[in-house]
Length: 207
Ligand code: SAH
Image 1 (tube, helix red, strand yellow):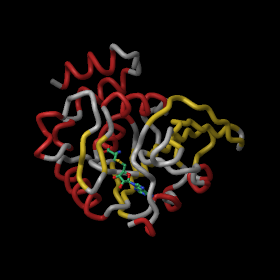
Image 2 (image 1 turned 90 degrees about the horizontal axis):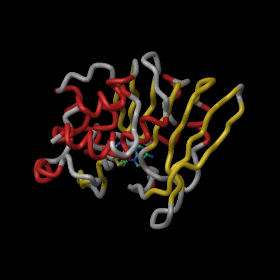
Image 3 (image 1 turned 60 degrees about the vertical axis):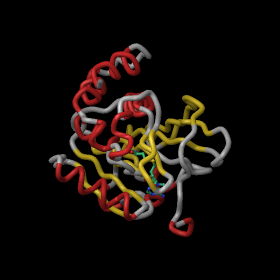
């Protein structure tokens, strides 16, 4: 089912980065999907992971990962660990992945799963990712998998020279734009990629 998913949903839709394709072929998506939805793990859609959150559609995971133009030496920050699936995909491609999840229970479940499965280059933290992870900054790439109204400035500040940030931006129940930011000689350039719908980016006061 995973091979079929990669062929039909990833390769046939134009993803060409070999590292992304290999990661999607390798990581067992069903392991990160809750028991009641496991039979649907390779479907062409997001799925509920509890606490009103979702694991993103496979194509969106591949698309966002490819747009980050990752190399093996990169250090990556993810905001919104959720199921842990996106972190696992990143960990196959880069040197190290730092991931933050604001919902404590989801953080506990995904951290345990990643540890049990032996993903040794993923570092997890429970908390609000708005301020990034200054102790490990700068990052070559940052991926945000929940949508804020505005891009958090601390995340732009924590991009390394040449670093890329991919993030959905926009109101909760309206059109959001998937945006990519790049830091070049200290300056930030930005491009809109797609219209998307992500779960809201929360702050501790929303919980
Ligand atoms: N990347 C995840 C997608 C999970 S959905 C996966 O592969 O499964 C987005 C996640 O972002 C949710 O779990 C939500 O709780 C989390 N989130 C929302 N706002 C956040 C914030 N400020 N800091 C960290 N995580 C946040």
